[in-house]
Length: 232
Image 1 (cartoon, rainbow, N blue to C red):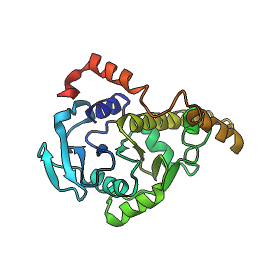
Image 2 (cartoon, helix red, strand yellow; image 1 turned 45 degrees about the vertical axis):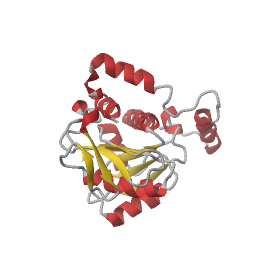
Image 3 (cartoon, rainbow, N blue to C red; image 1 turned 90 degrees about the vertical axis):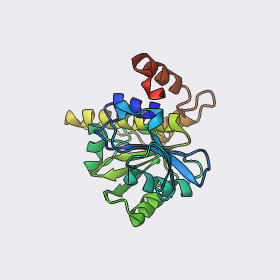
């Protein structure tokens, strides 16, 4: 989790103390881990993780303020999705700009094809009360990510490497789309059949599975070269 935070920071997704990585052990129904809510992504260490129950009650770890707006929706998603054990919510200019476009994310680039029929949309509500968290869970369904209109996004994964890869690809898709739109030229949108074919290139090859497992070791090596303190 600490490595995931540090990598998000390197990608420009650290928005002061805003954003979160929330995780649980697979199918655990009693508690989850997150970070204290007064640290920037670039300084988070493993020892800064906090153990909370699914009602955000403190259970152990660094006893400082917990980000309720992170753990409350995570609790609802974890209860509904046995396959989702990690949720990442972060901010970066591109991935906050696309949710403000009525067209949403366009299927016009390789990273975007990864999310074919895999993104949910929901109007943003910054309160994240129980009713809204139910709406998040309902909208997300079995998809890989949710875009909060006029706000940002959240991705889910079976583990940190998968969630980090999805976050990376979604941010790339948003950056590429904004670059395309800035030219004022007509954007080429493949047919539905072509979109499905591109999507299958990600998930139809048994020799290469896009779950972050190949990318993650390299991420850790880079983090270790730059600053190993995330391991503390």
